[in-house]
Length: 494
Image 1 (cartoon, rainbow, N blue to C red):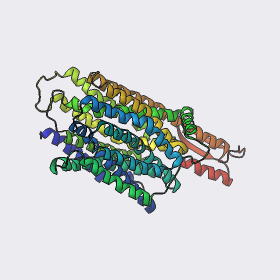
Image 2: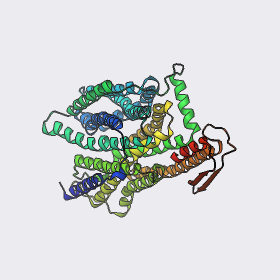
Image 3: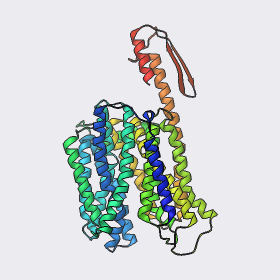
Image 4: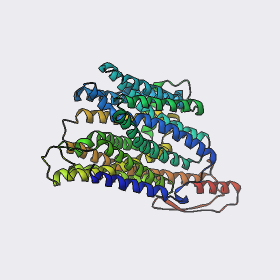
């Protein structure tokens, strides 16, 4: 292996180690024993769920190719997965609010295990069924578990700020460490032990089964809106109305779709971008490097979320802008660096530049996940959390299906340029979200000051409020009544 790959991997590993080991008490919340037990239980389950997902990822295309299917047929199988997530997954995922989030998480395990079982058959129809089941499972993975966590966290009365700890750790372990270990474990099963391309899917079923047992034995059920008089259509209408009525939710959904759409498109593009002339690149090692970059990002996010400033709405503007620049590098290098016509060989100079840019993008992905989870916990109403989160995935899946269908028709520079533009728009929308959130926070404080905590106007209470740059600088109360003192405490906490 070329020294370049080892230098990049070693540099990232050193940065992650330094960030984790240098954390002080200022970078950590002081939490309770009950919360730590709750957090660790969730992290074990989430890590097992993500291990079941990551074990499959690197071998799906390889398995289909092993069965003798061509690129066109494999492409249709992938499109079926994203289409299933958009159509069936949205319905099944939304049932979590009404039928229970714990039940939805168990459904994820069962559905994904069935999907893994279908990989034993070389028949195209059976594999297509597996992709449909996998699409449903993906929707549940990215909605039901987070919805259960937020609802259970609030039900147990834990500090709202402590959610950031769980989010950051979940991404660090589930999307970083487990991805690397799963890739290495899958490599041992397929290449070292010669168990065949189906072995990782069988291993994934085992991890999912263990996680399901823990869920059934330790988790309690929680709901969004369990009222019996609401059918699924009414629930959809309510979620759509909530999105339309609150610009913050609309902006959050657009930001998520733009970023995740670009991220999934990048998954299809990074290999041909780094090896346009069939250069010999270590795909598994590069994948591990990307996951290490994601761990670096989640480590940075845990520090950012542990402090009141900068707020998540603020620093995410920079993250989106940086990710836009990172995915613009393939376009820039294509214009400035003369393309090589030599087939095979080692990675080119432009490929090295792009690899560094892709690592930066993956670091942004590591920051994005816990940060978007934090914002969703703040802005999405509890009674329709899973439904709204699955609504967000509809435009995402449409975009990915279109991109996948046209991946050969459009030049790679056009695809990367489009992703870069989407991320730039996400940065602008994030700026708009921050402004609206600040205005909402200021108006809330003003209403409290004017009417009191119980909503009644108090003529005996005077307030001195000074706003400068949408930030509250001073607040004083000239009243001796106990209700006013209570209000001062409430506003101080805000």
